[in-house]
Image (cartoon, rainbow, N blue to C red; front, side, top):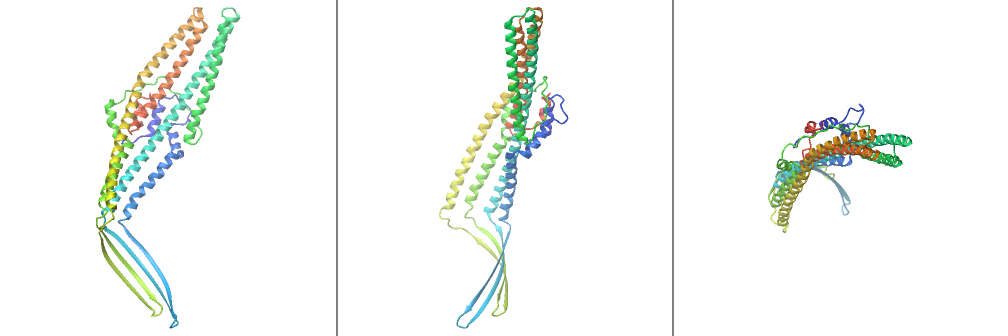
Length: 425
C-alpha cells in the first residue's frame, strides 16, 4: 500500500489557490489539528495500541510463569495441652515446552495486529478525506459568496443606471422595477451564501477543534489531468483496499481457528519446578526441598467439545470467505462509480469554462447593445446573471473534481496526494 503524504496534498491544493495571508490555515495545518481533535481517530489509535499487546499476551503462554505461596497455621492438643505452629512457603515455576495451541494463538495474534494496523491506516485515510472535503467545501462556499457579492454590486450599478435613464425618459418604469427586484434577490443570494460560509466554516472548525482562519479562493484556470489508467486497471487495485485486506486476514484467522479446534486434544509438555520451606516450632526444624518435573498432558475425551469447536470453526471460515467476497464486490462497485465521476470531471470543467466564456461574450454584447439602445435593461441583466451563474458552476465543479479524485484514490485504499500536484494547477 502506498504511503500518503498530507504535506503533498496541502501543497497540491495550495497550487489552485491565489496568494493569501501568511497566517491562512493550510490543509496540512487542518489535518494535523484534526488528528489531535477527532474522537474517531483517537479511538483508532487507542485500539491499535491495545491490539499491539495481543502478541505479548499470546507469547506469555509460552513464557515462564511463577508464583509464591505462603501459609501459616497452628494446632492445639487438648489432651496434652500443647500447641504448635507451622509456617511454609513455596515458589513454583512452569514453562510450556510444547503446545500446538499456544503456537497457533501466537500466529493469530500476529494476524490480528496486522489487521489493527490496517484499521488505523483506514482511519487516517478517512480523516484525511474528511478534512480535505470540509476544507474544499468551505472554499467552495467562499467562492460562491464572492460571486454573489459581485453580482449584487453589478446589479446595483445597473439599477442606478436604469433609474437615471428613467428620470431622463429613456427607460421604462418596468425596467426600473425589474432591476430593483433583481437587486433585492441578489441581496438574498448574498445572505444565503454567507450562511453557507458560516456553516462550512463551523463544520471545519468542529473537525479541527478550533477557529478557521481566512482561506483563498481557487483560480479560475483550474485544469485536471486524465486519470492514470483505465477502469480495469483501477479495478485491479481494489485488493489494496484496507477493508478487503482486513477481510483476507479474517479468513486467515478463521482458518487458524480450524487448526486450533483440531489440536485441542493434542499433547502438551510442561516443565515445572518448585522450591519449598517448612518450619515447625514444636521441633524447631526447617525443612527445605526442591523439585523439577516434566509433565505430559494428553486430552483423551472432551465430551464432544472438540468436534463442536471444529464444526464451528469450519463454518466461521466459510462465513469469513463469503464476507471477503462481499467486500470485494462492494469495493469494485465503489471504484467503478468513483472512476466514472472523476472521468466526467474533465469534460464537465471544460464545458463549464466554455459556457462561462460564451456568457461573457453575450454579456459584453448585451452591454454594448444596451449603451446604443438596441438591447433592453432586462436583456443586459439576464446576460450579467448568466455570467455569475456560470462562474459559480465552474468554481463548484473545480472543487468537486478535487474531492472526486481524492475519493477515487481512497476507493482503492491508496489515498496518496503526491500525484495531485500535476493536475491541481
